[in-house]
Length: 133
Image (cartoon, helix red, strand yellow):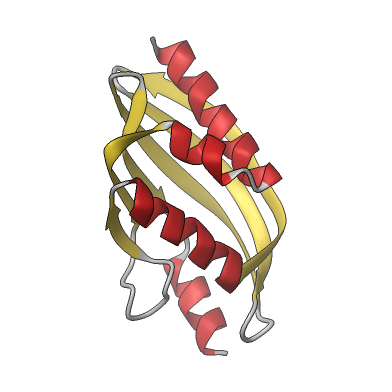
């Protein structure tokens, strides 16, 4: 099961790279618990969202807020019902033009062959400072 889960996560990242929101949403459970760790009051992409519609809003918010020059998932590890992905991204905050570049960690939890929970851990201070200009 863990190799299938890694393949699904890689497909989600591929969909993100193509701008294919439908393929991303297709890999999620209807009641997915999705969180980019941080406070939404500090940076609009941070915070928790529940359900596919909220994740679609999150993806639209990322597109409106950030421009990526690089998005590179680099390592994948599976254990039980989880996939851990480590990677790097670089880009700029659209409203200020401030650059960002940092490593990240994503944790996907699976139930019934779909992502039921997602957590993103990143350099939140860099994004907040970049957003404030």
